[in-house]
Length: 320
Image (cartoon, rainbow, N blue to C red; front, top):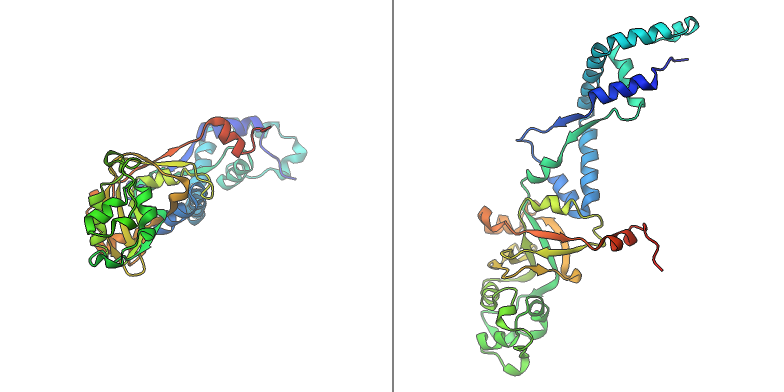
């Protein structure tokens, strides 16, 4: 039978050597697979990437563990000699070579608290992805804005509603029948528009295929996405003033001009679509348009629900 080190001595060793953290080089970047995992799965994707990262560097983990064991053999030399002296003679044949780092490493791994971890949070802000958020349910086909005779209200009504733009402005701008475009001037005044109507119309004029609307997020928003606990039941997200929105068709690689958000916008849950790394698509926004970096600076904030609501969601609180 093996003779085990005393728990008290193991605790002292773990306390002495912890934490065993491997710090990243400032030049190291998160790979495309990691960005994609986080965009698809939020916090769970971040955990999956961390696990994959550790597994792919397991030999380095062993090296760090062995070096830690060697350090402990040196620092706790006297305590280890004292322990050997207390072992009953009949157990001596079962004693390992106590100067062996591999033996001490195995002893410590079996003991709680001895674990190598990587400082990985910095990777969230160091990647080459171009992040987008899909504004779900606003997509529409090309409406022929250069030849407005076939433009129909029903196809763009969700967009006008989302951005709080009076439909009558479309008719007045493009000389269309007023009867087909409702007048919501009282409920959708100019000052309440989330984007300028003229900016949206300019985007339409320069959008050859139609498609969907996307928010062009700042790279730093990957850390925010990595903090989302459930991609199927998201908390409310606030899109901050100045965010850049663009229409794009990934099938044809065609974009509108981008336009700016006038006010903070607490996004309705129904409008929040998928997060995506635009840079992984050859027909993506950046590859087709070649925007400068300042175009990709939109920010979102997570609006966490009250504590009781969060506890209810996580089955931590009984609800009558």
